[in-house]
Amino acid sequence: MISEQMTAKEVFEKYKEDMLKLIAYQPWLEEKSGNAKMYEQYQTEGMTQNSMKFPVYDGTLLRFVREAENTVFMDRNYVYVISGNRLKSAEDEKAFVRKQTMLGMDNIGGVLSKYVMGGKVKGRMWSDAMDQGIFLEIVNKLKELYGEGLNFEVG
Image (tube, rainbow, N blue to C red; front, side, top):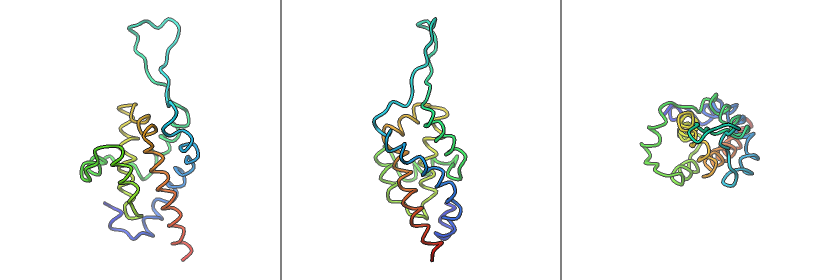
């Protein structure tokens, strides 16, 4: 955990720009989390029963994922955060994110990475994160921590 070797102010400085990038999606996430289908099955005339269907995702969701993918939050070792903290369900993950402090930014990144990076292999994970409110929970926590971090710059 890199964050645990840093002061809260140092962690804030490291993450603040990327926090703002993701916080910008909060209104959209609030509107769409849990109540909107995030993809459609691509179909065209002439597709047969044996044709492979694939999902076409909501454009804003794809922008959010791309934005998240290019932040310091991404951690290829996210599995250690998930398994090390015995996170077995979306509710476990959301509760875990809610209790993080500035020094737990790596933990938040681990949960975000699970869905962003995992969704590149299993596309359904992006929709699951939206349905279950995980992206929203993460962004809400980032907004809260960003507000706390601004106190470092004032003080």
